Image 1 (cartoon, rainbow, N blue to C red):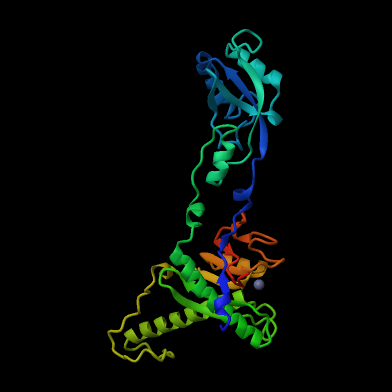
Image 2: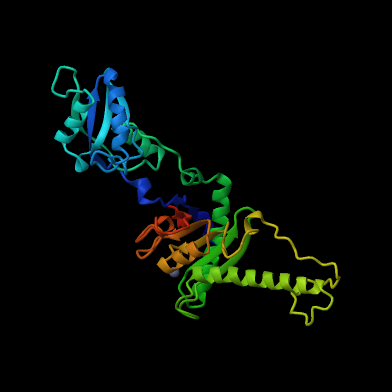
Amino acid sequence: MSDQGQMAWSTPEPVHSDERTRGFDPVTVFVATVPPRSLSALLPWVSVLSVGDNGLERPLGALQHLKRVRPANGMQQVILAPVAESTLSELELLLARSGIDTHGDSGATIDQVAVSRWAPATRAQFDDWKERWPMSFRLAAAERSDALSDAEVAAAQRFMQLALDAAEDAAAAGDEPVGAVMADPKSGVVVARASDLRRTHHPLMHATMACIEAVASAERARRAREAASQADEQPNAGEKRGRHDNDQDDGQDEVAEPDEGEGRADLGGYLCSGLDLYVTREPCAMCAMALVHSRIRRVFYGERSDEGALGSAHKLHVHPSLNHHYLVFRDLRRQLQP
Ligand SMILES: [Zn+2]
């Protein structure tokens, strides 16, 4: 720590899904421009179109984020169907059936307009893409929770320093220089701390796996204590199981200790619910999947890795096929100041 004066923490950066970082991706749709008085004649069959009648299958099926109608220079514009799923002559025929002549002097036309293929996932995308065509937007919970308070950043730095210490221990032991810490953000308590063991103990014991194992081990011990104290409540429960040293009282009225932290109360099968992981290097795919299975809340990591699964090679934490997603922040590291 002698060099602490020259070292400064970098700001952790959230690792977003591609859905949140992509730019405007156009899909071309047929749009009818009609006089306002014709809109009421048009809308009934537009709504019929959208349930798949008239030989057209759900024309806006994948474009539900778009508003169907927008005003334009005293006229009304209505999305009819994606160009890929319809033809101009077909749509002209359907408009004619509604009494709208696209070749007459009513001003009615059918044009092609490029609209956003995707629903916006961020406010910035919404502000950009709605200029092409109006759309609806609901701020995702993930976007709200992305912002770290000063207190959260300070806590993150404190926990990452512990992980860096664990990485130093690993290096001193001749192992991969990676360290990990599991912490409860509500209580600020460090639940587990682990150094990488892949070289000295087992090839799969990466620091993250070792940390999850340490949480599991502590949980097994807690359940054993709980089972033991429950057994003690029954006078004739037979042999007494090994009880933990800090439990001195042998009284019959002893009850199982309630779980203190709210986030930890519903552990069930989900080992790391409500917990944050701090690891000095970006987790690999194995570790990232283990974090999915254990229901981690957030992951902070320091150095990026070419094979890393949380932003570099993959983004497993936001993979759409996985049933649990977690927040990831990267580049939380101490660097020499220039
Ligand atoms: Zn790993």
